[in-house]
Image (tube, rainbow, N blue to C red):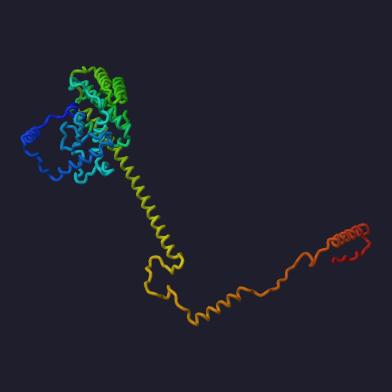
Length: 434
């Protein structure tokens, strides 16, 4: 595992190549600057690098970092950050299969077309913003430095997510690019390599970047190599590293020292090599990457369906608004004062008069017909009186209550007399009511 040769934070820039030395000597001798004529695709990368430099302050929170896009970085990693020179390298292969002429990072949302490259950029921006501490030079090449740099990977991304949680999907997409470069089918499955894989992947799970179901294959493999107790101890170390301040180098070195002690590895010695089965860790990491890609594809499909639904709703609302505007325009033509007859969808006739639209004086026959119609309407408005006969239970005229009460009393007296003498017939005088 080339941990140091592909480290994402390079505290010392790589040595100049022979071509760079020759160019520098030529310029020192007074020669004109060497400006090779690039091919058409290659000529686009300086523009893309300048655009990424313009967008970097929103990721890293600093404006002094220069982004360069090269066909293979000087460090050998897909991306690298150089704190001493404030340089950030991105491998152009990360933008494949897009043509460089179609890449425009200055346009918001363009990064969705190359999420892996943008995820690597976000990862290196996290180092630029939060990897402030440095390892002493005399510890370079030791197991302690390897452990410290490994712990810094998830710590920097965890700190980055506290500022920009929306970059999580890009970091997830680029996780396989950032991790798989350190593991090959020839990587031995010894305790040091297993712990290193856990520190890169399981630590990202605890940092909130990967999901537990995605890292389950590696967790099972690492548990079988290290045992649950040792894995729990290592988890406590990287969890403590996540809460370490950006400039607290001594604490990060202490965490790395505890990592080496847990694995029974001399801190000032080289990394352990050999031992264990080959391809075991690489296979488990491949399963993790496959699950991450599957979940990201499902999430992208869900977002695409949601976007399509929003677009359909927007089109429907736009159609309704257009229909309402057309209806209002038609109503304005039809019902506005002084408007002539109007048929929607048919153009107005430009002649001065037509049988349907326009005005003219009435003819004599039309005047006579109008008079007859007016007389008929006036006659129909006034109807002749009619006589209606109805029946009523009360007699006509005004009722005299005194006479009505007397009449009721007389009827009652006649009934009592007839009851006392049934054989006698008494005649009751009629009672008149006025």
